[in-house]
Length: 116
Image (cartoon, rainbow, N blue to C red; front, side, top):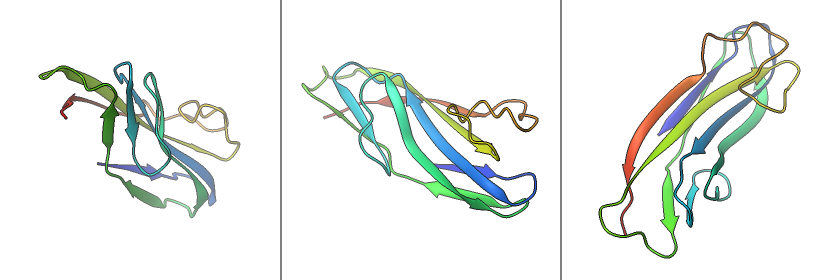
């Protein structure tokens, strides 16, 4: 899996995040950072300098763990949302108050079959 973040303006600091939601109770997800508990949270959170019109790609492997194991055949729909915030960094990277926001953040809804 991966996410792209692009700076459309002059060189500035940009925070790029990938958030996950929809994890079943007693399950965690993990990518580049620490584990994300059931309910959701950040899989990727990177703040770095971007040049004008620069795009950065963040590739990651998503793994899930459930304890105790879920019954066989359970399907969970996880939602992954990638957002970027430049200039003044807002607490919510999907709300960029200092520039005209994009029409919508990248939004991917993917059914994931959890297995043992």
